Amino acid sequence: MKYITRHLEEVIIKLSDSFPAILLTGPRQTGKTTMLRMLAEKENSGRRYVSLDDLTARELAKNDPALFLDIHKPPILIDEVQYAPELFTYIKIHIDTYLNPGDFWMTGSQIFSLMRGVQESLAGRVAILSMSPLSQREIAKKPSSIFDIKLDSLVDTSSNLQPLDTLEIYNNIWNGSMPGLISGLYADRDIYYSSYLATYIARDVKDISSAVDALKFNRFITAVAARTSQLLNFQAIANDAEITVQTAKEWMNILETLGIIFLLHPYSNNVLKRTIKTPKVYFYDTGLVCYLTKWSSPEVALNGAMSGALFENYAVSEIVKGYQNIGKVPNLYFYRDRDGKEVDIILEKDGKLHPIEIKKSVNPDIRITRTFQTLNKYPLEIGTGAVICMANSVSAFNKDNLIIPVWAL
Image (cartoon, rainbow, N blue to C red; front, side):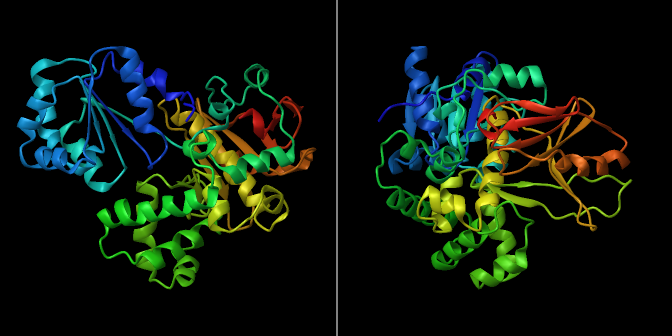
């Protein structure tokens, strides 16, 4: 398997010089352990590695955490730390006693008990980062870059990227962004995703809710995938999965906590009373969406009924991953009111609202930007807007509205 360099590596190294503990969260098989073990070898500090997937190590960590840390002395990398939240209090004691930066590296799925234990025991002592599936810049082996609506910056950061045509973009969408597939470790995409879902349901999902019915949960996540890039409709999802609305809400929370999906919330302000309050749902990995919704090839996905939704999911997830890869969270929203006026994305930055439309078009029409004026009722100033599309290069309609190819994100 060929290792793919991750943008979070620089963040981990930098934070290890100041924080005594780093917790790297995120969904399974995104490369958390692989990256940290590689970094541990490079730092040459003698960092020990222990996985709590090992039942013997897990039992010791749960029943005698003090002895566990005496045997596995820092600096240490503890994998799957969510299985022994009893460790957190003893890690806190060690940190407060020795104050050594970088003593503890930990990985874990984003499950409730893990985050609750960290927040209660290690507040102020731990840097929490999230790792998503690969971004398109990581796959292309290009430097990290966060989405910034500045023409000079966009031209500069896109100059070393290879422009992609429409089918190449849909190849990326269909192939997804899981390291095991992109690196070539797993050759059969369908078997990979089938096993991936089975592992999630059998392990993480049932750790959170032992009452989960595997077949119904599979129908549920498929129903969510069919509605990617749409307003979250719990009733429709519940009907498809043959579950109650309350169960659909609980399971949606599980998907979000485990890092499978994320929600984009509407931008709201007391000035406007007619805005929609419902969030939109997106997946971090568009390949999983294509697998669940049974698009058999990139060409079929390009020409299918979900083509626009897949393109929007791809664009939004790339923006989010770009921020996560430098340890930040973007202030991203969308706008929709009861009159049907909509702006796909609003980026709030430096006291301004930057409106963004996403269109599966090579030559977008400037009339697309007319809805941006809807935001004039907000007290914040409207900043530079943009249309993310299939264009061949970064350009502009005018000084206030840019044209950004999706491959340049």
